[in-house]
Image (cartoon, rainbow, N blue to C red; front, side, top):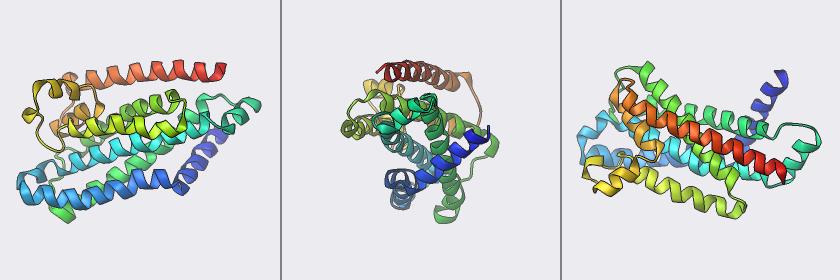
Length: 238
């Protein structure tokens, strides 16, 4: 147990030294919040009602889809994997540690947005903080599971960012944080339901847990976990 906790702390420190993690989990979300938050509130004052969830969904999606895959690719496409195997360390440990570390970073970033949004833009604080942060936790976990698939599946490290962006852009554009989902054509509205960001945003703004919103996220998470397990076995067999 002590070794596991040490690994988590070490991974967290390594992430703090990683430019990719700092940029995707902190710098870009804060810059997006500073610029787009002001634009949203100026153009549509009603956006104050959902500013915190929308900015948080962007931060979580950016940190998971863009930030996590390169870290995983670095582990499983380099000598780190050989070091794991040579020392009898389960390959799954690298996946677990990076996910836990990324979860902590994203939770910190989300908490920062939760605190500064009402001060900076007079954003409305969610009515039930408990339900809000539970919804946030679910969204982070599901988004990390999807990002893990990219990090484990892409064979060429150089292509990791490309696949991440291909998922990131539709996740943001079709989630409803930029404009209401009802304005989208039906095909795009249906496509948006394939991404955790869409369901997570609805869950965070619904102020209540409903099966209609939870089940899609649970299903995506379970499928992603099974795919990650299969990908780890394939990596181990190489």
